[in-house]
Length: 174
Image (cartoon, rainbow, N blue to C red; front, side):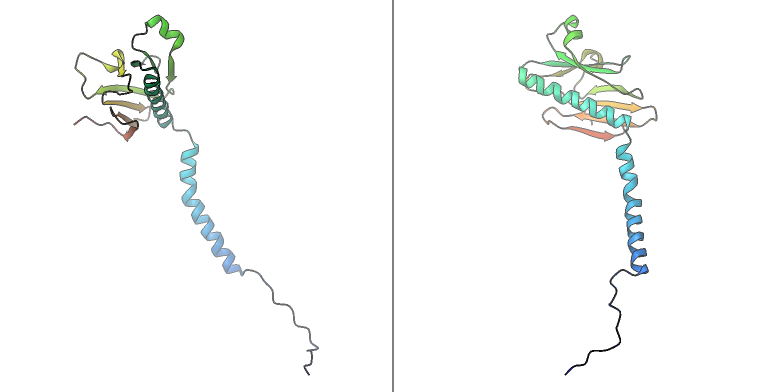
């Protein structure tokens, strides 16, 4: 027969030691310290990145519109107003004001050059427009954006690829 112990023993306590809690706090603070800068940079709006996304969106919508309408389009840039827009190639200037699709770049961002790989020296794509064929093809073009902090981005438009490549800095066609 077993006898029960008359002296009560306290039940084993379940929990974490102070050392375990300190290690967990240390690991959490290290992971937050590494992730907060990347979260902060993605939450703060970068005008140059925002401007480049707007330009890319306008070019993609122009290409899609050209393919759906089966008509050529032209993309123009007005440096005084920092406005980029597109219209049908056969559309007149007076009609353009009422039916144009446009974007305005942020105050700190400007397009300082639009360059085509096959462009002749007497044709300026910024003034004469970037030609988008009815199939959505565009001559190989680079659009150079910059901001007030002298940061530069190059947008590379390929004739047959639907994606637009974004490169930091400026590049040449070689």
